[in-house]
Length: 323
Image 1 (cartoon, rainbow, N blue to C red):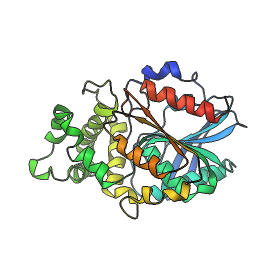
Image 2: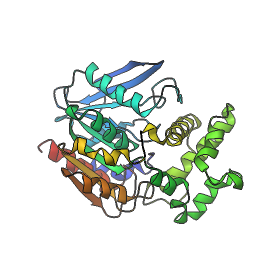
Image 3: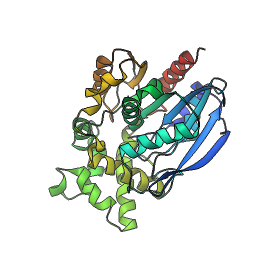
Image 4: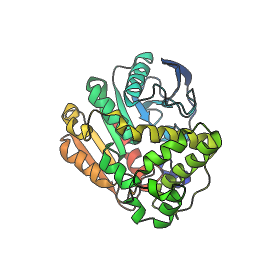
């Protein structure tokens, strides 16, 4: 769940812009080709960056949280979004396909272990990957923790967050007949997969706007209209994953399996006023994970671009890198 406005607010804390030294399209199977890039030091400490959404894709700003002299930074667009193809496709697109893709990328790049760095849905995927492959994970750095539970989905799509943003919630729900308001994820699913591109795009923009409006603590509640192609991939993939409870075996699986990563050092950077992924999930995770440090950032919401969150993430990666 991740699209961040106000990116320039964080610029003062980030490393200068950098271009990749490697870009490729990787055939991951089932008709999917995934965009992968590397930047920084080819001989540096490997770190894999997991973007949010699902469906958000990577941005050049994500390269800038790491000292390019210390880190070998691997970014990729998950199936169906960004530069990966086919665009907006949910066929053969599940959490476990993504976990396999991460492992394929690691092997393709001849990396033994790497740091897992992810926020929002990227935090979800990072935790699931690390629990599946703890021997390949040297450290975990998370932002805006989302544990993929029904309770969290009910908060954001069942009216909890809407109590704080009633005018934005009204815009989000107004496109759906009242008799379908009991399950807005399902109601939007019908429209996002209607087969009519104009309908899919209209509802995708509304889905994306609801989330974008709540991402930053500086938000006024209004957002610009997302490009149709981006919004359609973002909304369809998010809805697909949320309709299927993240393709997990049971509700609460991530927290139940935290023992699998107990030995791995972790850092969570969490906005105190995160309206999309409330801090109690980060607190519960840190409480159960004995080797984890929780950094609660005051005056910050959900967005990666919140100044306090950006500053803390850069400090964390500098510290891990030995600066």
